Image 1 (cartoon, rainbow, N blue to C red):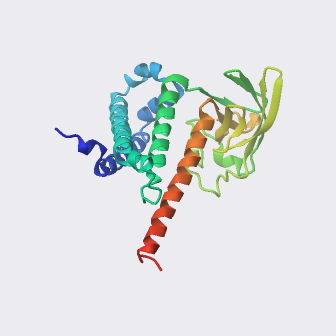
Image 2 (image 1 turned 120 degrees about the vertical axis):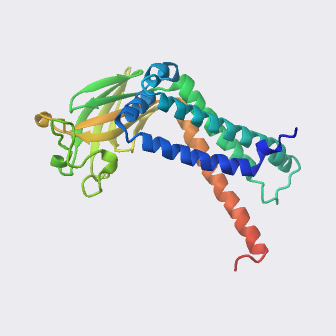
Length: 274
């Protein structure tokens, strides 16, 4: 039995559509408190410690099995397509072929998959903390201290009541009028042995030093802690693969742009554009 369907473009399209749908289901699941807490726990733990969290929500476990299955099939499809259809284009030096940039795109995509898998299983080096001004925590070999919080939006909108809710709600649902990420920063001092450095981190805009990335994921004022000022949730990622991630994503973007240019020039030569 021939296995041509495994490396077909049709299968890749179907898998991409299914993955989009599967991720949408995951987003919908995160709206429920139980599933959201389990997903957060999984995000903070290495894969070897997932089982205990998944027993509390087997639906999340089923969703993850489906996600890994779809990603495996997409990776296999990409690898087989690269080997069978695209590698001969480079071996034969067919530089004018409209498919010439498809092989780098496929290889870089596979590298992204591999790096994510290695990170998930073997590295997974990140820590989270909630800090007031002057507090500190350790992440790997780094000592991180929150020196100052410069919050310029309306603090009353992020002040929580006794139930944990605030007028502005979750940070991902706040409007720019309620929360402008460009105006609110946290200032940190980071120490690694005898070395020390300081800098600002913003919401989803990290402060970077060596293989450490510090990102603020939320600003809030807990109930009855108004006198302590604005509290920040901090995510510290120390991952030796992170620079390879950025390199792969950058090269992937360049390859996609070059492939688009190849098709655009080919279309002009055929008279498709004027």
